[in-house]
Amino acid sequence: MKQIAIIGSTGSIGTQTLDIIRQHPDRFKATVLTAGSNIELLIAQAKEFRPNLAVIADPRHFTRLYSELTPLGIETAAGADAIADAMERHDFEMVVTATVGYSGLLPTLRAIKAGKIIALANKETLVVAGELINRSLASSASVIIPVDSEHSAIYQCLAGEDPRAVTRLIITASGGPFRNMSVAELDKVTPADALRHPNWQMGAKITIDSATMLNKAFEIIEARWLFHVPGEKIEAVVHPQSIVHSMIELRDGAVKAQLGLPDMHLPISYALGEGSRMACDQRLTLSQFHNLEFYEPDPLKFPCITLGHYALEQGGITACVINAANEIANKAFRDSAIGFKQIYEVITDTLTKIEQIATPTLDDYIAVNDLARRLAAEKVARLSSKVFISDQPISLQQS
Image 1: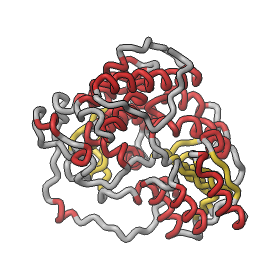
Image 2: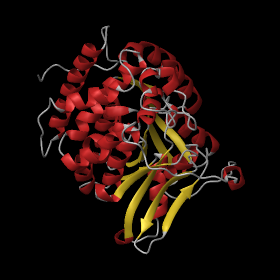
Image 3: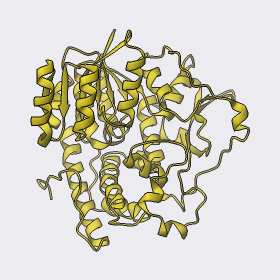
């Protein structure tokens, strides 16, 4: 019986992880569940799965969490520090990091310190601080197994291959809902338009990142740190059908691809099983997909995709700034405070205002994240006719 903690159990990846645990009660048990603010679903999950601990990040909901779950013998806690502290508990061996954004960094570092197996679905952890994560892994028994469908596909394709024989990693992208629009048409798209992803059911933040193609830039950065491949050997290709999840090219010219339906249950189950495969009812019928298309991404329409290689070339705190500014700009667009194309403007404006730190420490990442958020929020306010309020607190300790 593998004991599992889930950071972000109420989100898309978290709920699908619990689907798999529900289907395989003889193999897995959820011992720790955490959520951001969805108190209703967290309580329902805790009553079904009976973890040892349930944590809500938003402390305003703690009283209800405590009153509902304490009579059931379930320990409760609240706040971001409580989530990070939970990573060093002894009642689980694997943690699924299913939260979105920068919030996944500190819990992941604590899990590495504790030697946990990490099923990583929070790409921003490696985007923000990939070098720091890899340094931490070098002195820990911890390992990372990717959950993102693209990185899981590469991970599966690399199995049995000599890493020295790999010449390219090819990350596929659906192209999002605006793939066939002109640059001019992108001026008029709304948040509702951007949230209608053609293939995947995901959370709001990552769906907008897919529409801007910044998620592909992030996945290039993530792949660099996961697979120890230089950025120039990693590229993205638009594949509208989302059936080929990613590919690797080998030195003899062979290309290996992992195919599957656009559903996250497969990569999650592959990570939970640490490479062993579990039975699933879903089957890919290739005759349904007789046209599999591949296109070069268009950086004129989707300039955010260029930020992945830019961040790797610049190094230091560049990717941390991009991620922080994007979290502010993404939320501002969802709130109709800025336009779709202004997401890129907010990010690049923020990049020009923060001095590079070549070899950042954890304290540097924390300070830069706070500063970039503040500067991005100021840029949003200048672009918008209304006051923008971020859904995450911004420290003003550094100016």
